[in-house]
Amino acid sequence: MASADVVVRPTKWSKVAVTLNPIFRKGVLAATHNRAVAAGVRRYGMQCGAARFVAGETIDEAVPVLRSLNQKGLRTNTTLLGEHVRDETMAREVVTAYRIVLDRIAAERLTTNVALKLTHLGLDLGEELAYANAAELVAHAATRGNFIRIDMEESTRVDATLRIYRRLREAGHDNLGTVLQAYLHRTEADLEGLLPLAPNLRLVKGAYLEPATVAYPKKADVDAGFLRLAQRMLRAANGFTAIATHDERLIEHLIGFARREGVAGDRFEFQMLYGIRPQLQADLVRRGHRVLVATPFGPDWYFYLMRRLAERPANALFFAQNLAHR
Image (cartoon, rainbow, N blue to C red):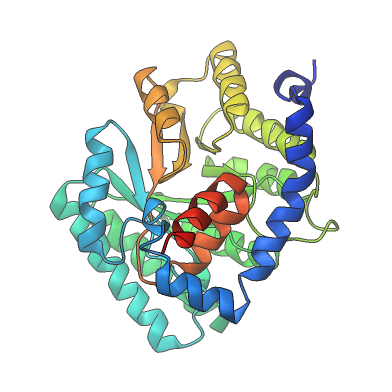
């Protein structure tokens, strides 16, 4: 039976939700760049629900959240929110801030690693600058016994991101991983090219608005692709697979697949976002699975929040209800 047949069991209402969700998602992402929307959300967002998804605006605010998650048996990563830096001085400030974050994680003895975006390190100013800044942070993380994951951004930046990842690995940095997006047509080929590196890879569905020429527009196709890619990763003889989804059907299918294939529990984990499906996170830990919660912080939280609202109508409803009661 095909993977998608095993997992996808649409009801009448889920079919409606799947049909409407792409339209809803496009609407929210389009509104992200509306000045009035941006001004309102930035003014009231943290008080009206952004704090459900973001662990504060400073590392001091984030540390208690990270510690609380660790105490519940959850691994964590953190991100200083921001992207598309267009000034070299600002990129340098981001590097300095991440060095402080890595030092603080070590001092607090948190089970937390770091995820970062290359455009936050200056990729839009040049690939060499982003590479140098990433190399400095990966080396600093190694002195703290820590790990860095390079996040994936829009499809136009995939090639540069993978080139930098490869260069860092070739330079001997092993405390490093990256991300693949299941909705991109190119991802299966990208995965095959990376497998010889025994990579640490996070698989996500994809959160950016991409054209149909680049990405699968239908949820069913994205889900089927996600399963194919995750199973290929788990079947690989080495490497580590981070399965980033909140979809219980996909999770249960992959748990069964890993069991049947004899994949050791320390070769994969489930990754979810802070504030989304916390009970599912706790249940998976109780069942003995590794779970990591992505727990970002920082004052530049607006675009991150809008992507979370676009992903699930329930997130947007929660936020809108709080905003309406202001």
